[in-house]
Amino acid sequence: MLRSPPLDSKDVDQMTEHGRHIELLTKLHFLSAPPEMGSIDCKFTYSADDPFAVCIRLMVTADRGVTWVVGRDLLYAGVERPNGEGDFKVWPTRGPHGRSLLYLRLEVPEGSATFVADLTVVRRWLEDTYAMVPSGSEGTYLDWDALTESLLPPV
Image (tube, rainbow, N blue to C red; front, side, top):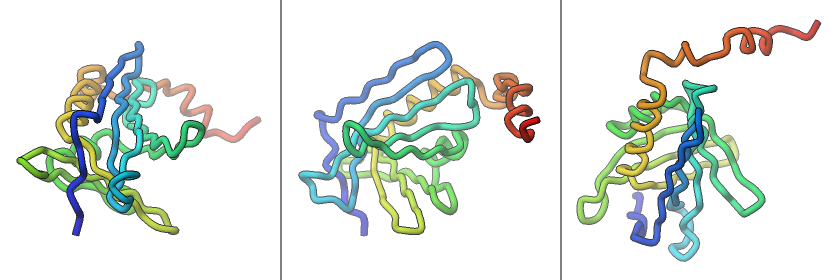
């Protein structure tokens, strides 16, 4: 059974937009950790240069992080209903006092971890990414020549 995280007003969320990318700095709560060690800084990054993906960077320490790259549409679908297969799963739920929460489950062969975030904050940030690059227009933002060149073997 998943326990409710201690989300409170100390969780500072910061959204910033830098030209062609937008970031959300927030806290995720690690459900397997003791309450006093249960939160981790997390940066969600979206770039118009890679319009189909969202980078989720978990700041393990000040110098070290772990980055997961997931589909933007997959993450957005996960704020509405359970979504994902394999190594990334995401789903919404209601927490204490009706608070909207978003669970993120990351899996690797060595183990798995489940985190929880404020669903309202993540949804608002995702909506900003769709304002930047509307759904269905992602292909117009790609540099197709650079992509093709990166896929071809060196000459």
